[in-house]
Structure formats: C-alpha cells, structure tokens
Amino acid sequence: MTAFDTATSHQIVDSGFAADVLAGLSDNPKWISSKHLYDKRGSELFDKICGLDEYYVTRAEAEIMRASSAEIVEQLGGPVNLIEFGSGSSMKTRLLLDHLDPASVYLPVDVSREHLEESCEALAADFPELAIEPLPGDFTQPIELPEWADNGLANVTYFPGSTLGNFEEADAIGLLKNMRSLCGDDGQALIGVDLQKDPQVIHAAYNDREGVTAEFTKNLLRRINRELGAEIPVDDFDYHAHYNTAKGRIEAALVSRCDQRHEVRGREISFGRGEPIRTEYSHKYTIPQFAAMADQAGFELRRQWNDRRRYFAVLLMSPTKTSI
Image (cartoon, rainbow, N blue to C red):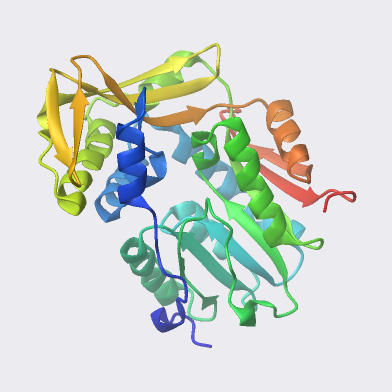
C-alpha cells in the first residue's frame, strides 16, 4: 500500500445535494443542511475563516494541540488507524500526525473529494512514512472501511474543530453512534468541543468584519446555481447569524431581501421578503452536557484538554463496558 493512492479511494461521494436542497427549500421554515456548505470553494473559504481574528475556535484548539499532542498520542497507545472526520487540511491535524506512530494508518473522510485529495497529497509529501487512505464520503452516514483496514490496529475516530455542534442533539448522538461503531470495543474517539462562553465572543466569531463567513454561507446559493442549474440572485439574500442563549447555539441563515420566485430542478420555489433559509446551527456545550450525549452513544469520557481561557476542549472518549 502506497502512502497516498487516489485509486484506492473506494467510496463514491453521494452527498444527496439536489434532494436535500429541494426538500429543504420546500419545507416551512426553509433549511439546507450545513454539510452542503463544504464544496471545494466552501472548504477554501472555511480554511480562511479559521485564520480570522474573531474566529477563536482555531486558535484555542491549536493551543491545545501544540501543548498536548504528544500526551494525546501517548494516550492512544501505539500505532492506530486514525479515522478523521474531515479533510486533514488543518494545522491541528498536522500537530497530531507529528507525534503519531509512523506504523499507523491515516484515513480522512470528507464530502469534498477534490479538497480531500489535495489535502492528502500535501500531507503525503510531509509525512512520507505514513500510510494515507482518503475516503471521499459523507461522514454523517455509516462509513465502510476498506477490507485491509482490518489490520489488527485499533480504530481511533478523530473529529476536530466544532463541527459536531452543527447537529441537533438527536443527530449529534447518531453521529457519535457511527463513531462508536467504527471504534469497536478496543478503539477510542478524540473529539473537539466548543464550550459555552461570553455570548459576545461567540457572536463575533460568526459575524467577522471582513465578511468571509457571509461569503462562505452565500457560496451555498452559488453552488445551487452552478450544480442545479438555478439562477438565484445571490445579492438578493443577506447573511444573518445570532447567538440563541437559551438554546446555547449560533443560528445562521440567508434572509431574502424581497419577494421572489426561482426554479430549482424544475420546481418553483417562492421566498417571501424577510424569509430565512436556515443554513447552520452551531451548538456550544458544557462538559457535562457533552458527556451525557456521548453516554447515550456508548462512550465515556477518559481525558480532557483545555486551552488557557477554557474556550475549547479536546475530549478522549472510550467505549463504555456495557455499550453494544
């Protein structure tokens, strides 16, 4: 097995984009799953968001990984199959791989095949001894590992960033159950968790001065136009994001500036003036809240690492003895 071979990327990406868009825009209230924000352009814009002054998440998590990656890898125990839910393009992944046993196998899963393969090519150049197997696919669905991954190594699922917070509780628990299934009885899960904090800090992170987050979200409309043959005027929608303190989450939407109608895949979609399309939730947790969700999925908290301001946590979870 070579360090990086796109020919062995056996899964075919089927993100259900058209079906999801039609279902969401026909619903009341309207919505589109946040996973569809991450086409190639969306992934590039999100990488830019991660470098913004207001976006504390990346800096807080990087602080943890710089200080604790060696200790985290020590807790993983020897070579493993490291299955990342994401493309592996971030610095925090590299910080972890710096300490990973070179006999390990790295398997990143991402819905954007092009972005995934570009990231893996860059990683292969910097980590030539590490076997890298990109798995293009939707990690919100059950993941089928290649047969050779039954190689005697424990599976460790790695979900950096705060993406798990994009899911409502039942869906987040379902995703954790997918991770639990991949881990088996001998594996572990390493998960990034965005913690509750000053609401003004959270609000600023999703309303940056440069407007990159707005462009990232509006790219969803551009993707609909490009891939589904629609002609929705992007400038006829505004980006809105506010922090709902009662529910502990950011609620982001594209809001129609006027009454308008557009055709998407042969279906007429109407938008009223001021009508939102919900594009993202981003939940912020306390450690007990997250541990309770993980418990429902068959995990228990083993270790946690925090940045100095306690804005973020990296949690190491193990399967509970009674989970099935």
